[in-house]
Length: 638
Image (cartoon, rainbow, N blue to C red; front, side, top):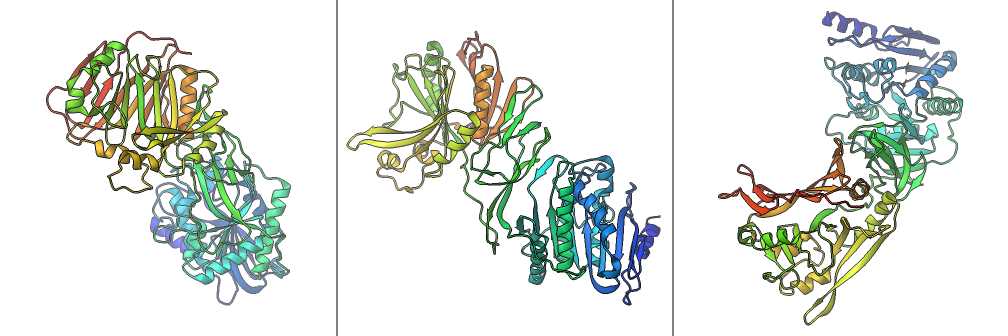
């Protein structure tokens, strides 16, 4: 049966006869000066795929063969309705060449009203080219379009709009690095003739599968453009008129239709574009509109769960223009929310480098204020300093703490813990936690101010802290960025810091180091002892009041952490080498647990009892440990 269908398809898809007597695509057969409707079959596979509706308009005189396609995504209606109108308006008796119109390229998606994906295999048709003759339904459609359309025409116009869930700023795209430079030039001319307000040159990687329609056509020597105009499953008369006029200009530029092809106005050009993806399942409310200019760090919208709790606040990674934005609530991890582009008035000759953006944020250290008995137990635990980690009393001398010390610095390779007793010199209350994050690119801290300010809706301050060094006076130590709380916070502080080069010069005057190395490892490296167990902090579990948990999660998301789950009242977020677990409670207990990576699997005792339910536990199979804090009486925290 498969062999019969393939043979039938080859017969139906015969090439235009050399003498120009017939133009045949599937069951649509048009003689010179005629218009014909029909269907292009999609053979092969175990699942039937509806044939693709096509119109063939054969000009009275010889000329180029041009394919116009719509419906690659079934909920994009502006292209489908425009080509329906254009198929009736083109006059074959005055045309040169042939126009092949694929009215709905993805019939299953159109019939089932799906966005992005085909309903049978959940694949995006514009990501599977050149397709597979014996593959899934979507892959088979791509194969037919590649071999029965792209391979038989002289030019391709793939017409899109925003999908059923997207609002879009109109643009036309072309491949700027086709293997044949002449194909690039012809594609560029088609794009300019269309007359969109924005032109987007693309530089795909031709080393692997071409994936997209335009890339596939140009790789096969056929100039092509992609049009984007309209969206949100709507089709206004103005949108239909503008797209139809643009297509007619392209047909005039190609010599198919008589007349001038001058485009209205001069376009702007996209030099760089990037989509901001959803990190979670949730309900998205956009905060921007198509065509709007946004600054780096600007709030793009908000994702909430079904209960109205904020899961993520996406922000602009760079300053640019909104190309499209999702306007319906459902979003899933890895799907686009907003596409941003940087624009210029000059057509770029080569791909742009990525614009500057906020640097990655890592955990530097955290502190926790322990009750007197718990702190005394840790201070008296010989194993803490003899086997677990390098323990000292702090900068600049890193002295061994004595029996009266109210602070213990427990140092790993990149992170450290600051354990405080109730008599600490900072006056911090028992149970309070401080989280010190940091950037490790010199001069980049200020880029985080915008994302924090827009995500939190609060003032954000940047301060500089100095430290005294014997013989050198006060030396710049670090810059810090922190929010201004509406009231003193007795449960949790968070800040982001950037070490300053002068600090390292004063701390290690005899050590050779790069003047630009402001990393955690530059601070801890000389003190790190690999013969001890502790490598780094990998996981922190907190229990906070609902209000503080909400703010803390927004802070983390604004700083680049991604929420990976939210079962019930427990939220998990993942960042650079660190996982957070944040639990909501009316009477929160603060820090619950800390997970560590180790230099090796521990031998000997695996559990150290620290009293009142607190313990230090080591895995018997992996280089991992966890510090479980006392799970005693809860305390009310505002």
